[in-house]
Structures are given as structure tokens and as C-alpha cells.
Image 1: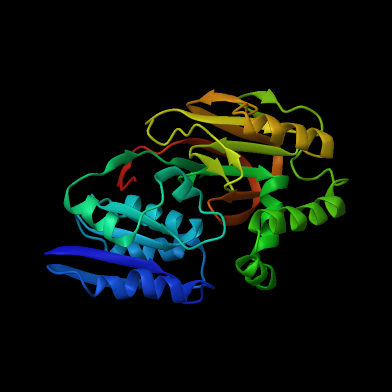
Image 2 (image 1 turned 120 degrees about the vertical axis):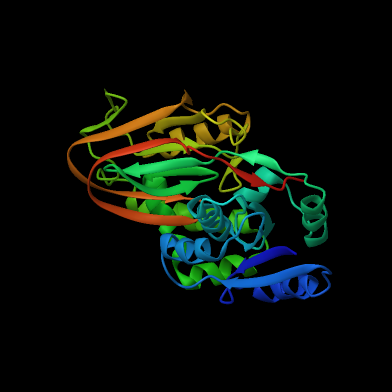
Amino acid sequence: MKRIIIVYSPRSARFSEVRRKVIEKSRELKGWMVLKFEVEEAPLRENSKRLAKIIKKDDLILSAGGDGTAAMSMNAIIESGRIATLGVMPFGNFNDYVETLGKMTFDRIIRKFEEGKYKEFYPLDAIVDGEHLMYSGAYFTIGMMAEATWLFKENKVRRKLVKARNRLFFSARKLFGWYVRNKRRKDFLPSDMYVNDVQVEKNTTDYIAINGKSVASVVPCIGWWRDPEVFWSGTMRNRSLMRMFGKFLKSQEGKLPGNESKSDLIRFKTVANVYMHADGEGKELSGVLEIEIKKARNGLRVIEA
């Protein structure tokens, strides 16, 4: 019997949609065992470990939520060590996974899975001081942009974002206010930071590694998720508003700062405290000496539109 595990958060502002478009639809399935997994208010690693324990070979894991839910589901599949397939339905604020995989209905995901029409997906892997931290399907950022995203962790901001008529404008307004308050800070990245043995330029605020087709559904990318070895990465100086706006315009033309890479080794001469963000999941790293970003050793199956 085929199995589907529906992954969702009952606390989501869009849970009523998840219930109507996914959970209720699953009751119509014939010849399937339907399991439901509720995401708890806990770090990604804790939820992914719980989910990994119940995944079996050939399961369909359907993420019904935002990028954080999709990333947690992807991490769980890889950590389970079993061959399972990931399907994603967008009920988040930015939905970079859906930008990459394409928007699909519940019925279409089921149909493609039953027909065996899946693709291989190769995420990024972050290793901090020799220990695996997490996998990312879309991107990793370290520094100013990563810290700014913590603004959207606030429940009040998240509720307003869901109700906003224009989410992009609302997000931009909130981020601009944060930027004005913090742009003079010089502690986003340590001055003794090296990427692949090259010291970063003075006033560098961000490191970014890109794997998916967009960053926050704003910056369009070619996407490297199908490549088992290569991703895109670079550093940026975003303290100047004009410089940031110029890079944003170039990104709309497909001109991203950086180069293709197979592995980035980020080192600090002295222990550092930095913010990292990936796929809707933020983390403050304390006392870090080394961060390695590379492709995961093994990929996974995904349903694409």
C-alpha cells in the first residue's frame, strides 16, 4: 500500500487552506495510507529527526507550508537514509521551493508520484566546525541579510504579512526600516573572515550560496538544484543603499555577484558569532571557526511541475 505523510503546522496563519486543499483531499485517496505530521514549535533539526523516524522506503512526503516546512521535510528524507519523494504545496510567505519546483495541486502531485515522474534534487550542505548543521534546497546566507530575516520571525509581523495585499511591498517596507536602523553596524561579518583562503573585502556584509531558482522569491536565479556538484556563491557589501539597489537591478537581469563553486570553506581567524539563514530557518552561530558549504553527498527525489 502506498503511503503519504502530510507535513504541516496547525499554527500556520493559512492552516484553514491546508485543511481544505490537502487534508480533506487526502480522504478521497483510494489504496493509500495517509499519515499526518504536525510541525512543532522547535528547531528544524528536532522536527526533522522526529519525521525521519517514521519515513519508510517509497513514501511520498507532502510539505504543505512555507519554505521552513519544505526544508525540514527535505532534511528528514535525507537523514532517514530511505528513498522517499518530496512534494511541495505553497502555504508560506515567500515559497522559494515552489519557485524552483513549480506550483502544483494536490491531485497533480499524487498523479505524478503514481506515474513515477520525479526528478533528482541535490541540496546544499552546511558543515560548521566539522559537524553537519542542515541541508538547504534554495540558499544559505550569512551576515546582514540573514540577520534581517529574523524580523519575520515576530508573530505580529507574520500575521500582517499573511493579510497584506502586496506582500513584496510590505516586506520591502519592513526591511527598509530595519536597514535604516542597522546600516551603520560593522559587526555583520568579522573582518578576519576568509573564503577559500581569500580574505573578504573591507565592509563586506554578506555571504550567499544559491542552489534554487530564487532567493526570497525576489531575486531570480538560474538554479543549480539538478547539479550534483555545483552551486553559485559570492560576497556582497550591502551597507550602501545605492549599491544594494544596483545589485538588485542587476539580479533581475540574471547578473548575480559571485561564481560557480563546488565547495566554499569560510574561516575566521578568531572565534566568531554570525547569523545564518536558509529556506525560512534562521540560526545564530556562536563561537564558530569554520563553515563549509558544499553539495550534499546524496540527492533526493522531488515532484516537479
